[in-house]
Image (cartoon, rainbow, N blue to C red; front, side, top):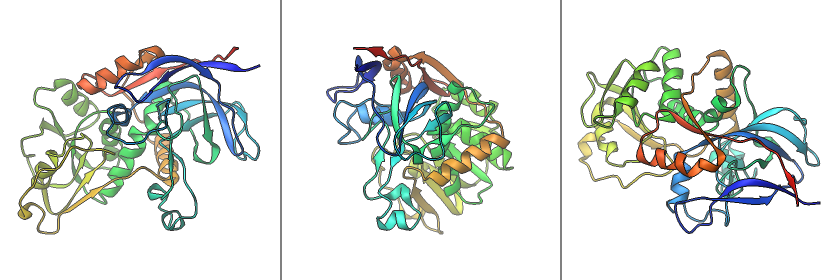
Length: 338
């Protein structure tokens, strides 16, 4: 008898999801079926709904910050068992044999699959995931507070790593990723300078609460030159501002999957060996490293919880910039018979 589940579905025709009952997915070889308990809401979900990321899976269930418990395992799964708590990130599968995969750069795979984009994600009661791309969640985090680690934490951590040994770091766009990165950087004895939208006191307060030593509007320079700047806001106009803020030899890292066009700027801003780089996706090694950090350095995730059926409201708050921290959907899995 076919089992059914609740889900929020994107049909590709507009920026809203619809509530639906869809079949519970069946795990294939190497896959696990997970009863989803929480799923974070990410800006990437907005980029998909707005058509800024082309060719999503038709009739898509979004969501790639998934926490839940394994309900069943497909043939050949090793290392996991039913009942274990796991997280599912953006990177859903890679080919394993292209030049990038062979060079341990699977985040640049030529034929990747992405959770909540090219394969169904976690805005549902159940999800099927490739077991090789799942992570164990550290103890000490409940499901809802763990969910943002699976993308905001992972992509934020990779963005921080791209800054190298920088000590004074500016962050533009202080939301889900930034408030986790700040805590990691402060634990590493770095200084964080937070740039927020003028008048956004909630973001400024979150920055101070998580350890930033300075906050200010994004259109003003920091009190001292920076070694690096991380840009999480999808606003291309921030790139020249960040280049002005970093010292000679400094690095500007763009941490988003999509950004508006970068305006032209004088070569003088890039000169003196400043670097402008981007971050693409994540590797499983990034995830394993972050989970080890989260185990030894408790990270406080600031969240606002919504029921599954209010996913559109959570997305609207993210779009409007009224969320402080991360939005998380609370999901309780219970399949029903046909």
